[in-house]
Length: 332
Image 1 (cartoon, rainbow, N blue to C red):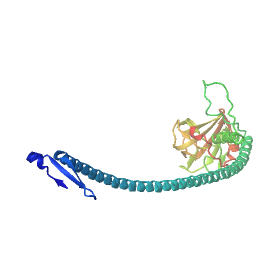
Image 2 (tube, rainbow, N blue to C red):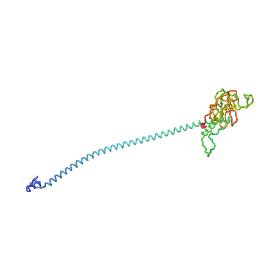
Image 3 (tube, rainbow, N blue to C red):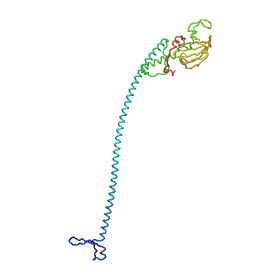
Image 4 (cartoon, rainbow, N blue to C red):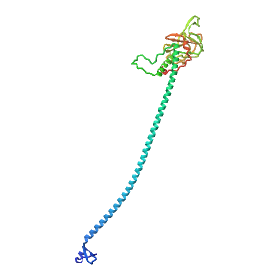
């Protein structure tokens, strides 16, 4: 127990405390404790206790935060695992889709190849048929040309003042056949064939009795019976070189067909073309009349080769021949 120090007086009482310790044998012992030391020790204990309480509170708070962070980390790990699984499934789906697309592309390519092969076979069959038909037609045209004594027309593409090294075209068989047939067709296109009017013949080519003076004469063309105003058609493609009044011929039209051929139409009532016009076979060029030296409405029709009159009858025999326009006709 604590007791005061009476020997020290009032001052001593304020400076010391005594701690009395009694044993079981009855002996006692006094321990003097300075008052300042006592209060200092008490204050130190209070500070230590406060520090312990603060440290405990801080530790508890950190522990709680650690548990919260651990919980969040576990959640993030779970989300990461879930995302990883989703990514793996997406990658698997993507690989499957890529594989499927590759198969579909391969199937499409195979189908396209089969279709191309089928088209190629069909095309070859069509070309073979066309070449056969074209060859037959070419031979028929050549036969007609031989009977008419026609020579292949020179290409309109040839020009003067040109040259350069020759390089073979290296054409295939069907291209060469097309080229040859086109040349035949072009020649026939520019040759005066058939009748200019549908009427019957009133006077043939050659020697005859002149209808005006009844004297013997040479008729350089063929006269056709026709009514006044009946349409006159060109017998071949060419260029109009004359469309004017020409003495005894009256109103007169002449067409240059190239390759030495020219056709003439006399005694017209009126013109439907003028000099310089390009015409095609079957095109309207004028109307039947009786102008010039004529006994009545009719058409005088002449054909010349290199300036000399020839009998148009042979060329009129192919009136029923139907021929396509050649590929390069637009250029002529």
